[in-house]
Length: 66
Image 1 (spheres, helix red, strand yellow):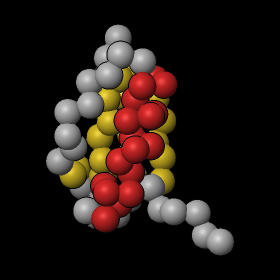
Image 2 (tube, one colour):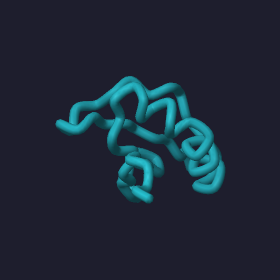
Image 3 (tube, rainbow, N blue to C red):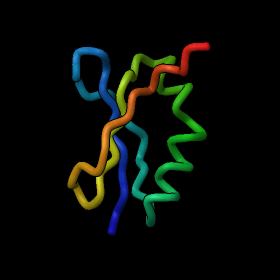
């Protein structure tokens, strides 16, 4: 199984995503956890986790409000 992320901007347009072919869901989530702020700074508002091309879930990249 291959786990990958795709990124979208606020309008739902795809944003170039660095290669993220990872071996497990945990690896994929850690990979995004280390980079999400950088992606948000580049205009990404949503990350979509895919398992072998099938959408597992979508996640908002906005930081939590305090």
